[in-house]
Length: 278
Image (tube, helix red, strand yellow):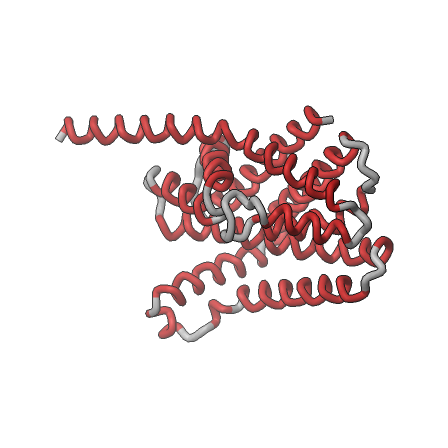
């Protein structure tokens, strides 16, 4: 079961890299799948040992921009990657609401899920139309960046085929995470059903991506214990699952460190060669 969990985590990384690969192509960055895969793995490595989200995304932007691509396009691709992941997470929360009504008796929790889902949908809709702001507002750098992100989001929404494919990949990735936790629970013979996992795993994954802890440690454990406890999962079982999930994530991300060192050495060699030729 632990081997199966490692395989699921590995496949989830492939799905994440493939989703970003599709987004890169959408914003006009043409690269073979091998480049986004290696860069995504490096980002995953940095997210495991530094504040989650910020470190990995910054490294991804730096590495792809070093290949000669437009900085604004690379930044847009990373932001769209995060944004679509958040949007699909909201859709997963919609499914969780129906599941909640079957396994949770806490009405407050159900209403809280519904509120967050509604706010997420409203926020995504507002972002899709920010590009309609007066052009004079784009003189400010932050608003110009938001304008471009909004325009990309709108263009993506008007491409049902591309949006559908990217969303399906993102949803499969989230489902893989739920299945991963369920497999770990079965490995330890915890009395946790797949429906229970659908209730607490998506919010835990969302909270783990917030840049307020190193590798998500502490946040993941607290969220796992709190949310899983509302569906009857014991604190000890939830804590064990969370720690094991974190360790598997670190283990799978380690090849990204090797890729990073090889990338840095290759970049340094290119710089020395350029200096020598001039």
